[in-house]
Length: 163
Image (cartoon, rainbow, N blue to C red):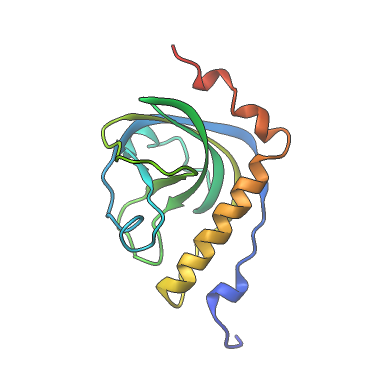
């Protein structure tokens, strides 16, 4: 195998899922790395909300829509599903970066999450700065993908309507 960094091999596949995945559950505290270390605050979904529902998905970065219970706005989201090889997590997580600047945390609130497509597989990077760059590129790719049909109309899906 030739030398070269892992990040040089990152390919953003941008593949729509054949069927959207709908998850709903509480936002729980994660490892506190998203905002503090990486500059990308994430909403971590309670593992009970996705247990057995996403086992068929490849570990990786995905795009979709998310809504927090106290804020009925539906936001674009880039999310990580898996064990985060950079940090060698021991448990699977679903961590969503909602494309918005929130004033306050929303731990304990209910979050609805619609997963629409796959950006790329998870990867381990040579440095935190390389990871930050990849996350920035992932978010940009997710935002761009969600502007296209059919994704843009899914923002108004009945899933996000009050019950």
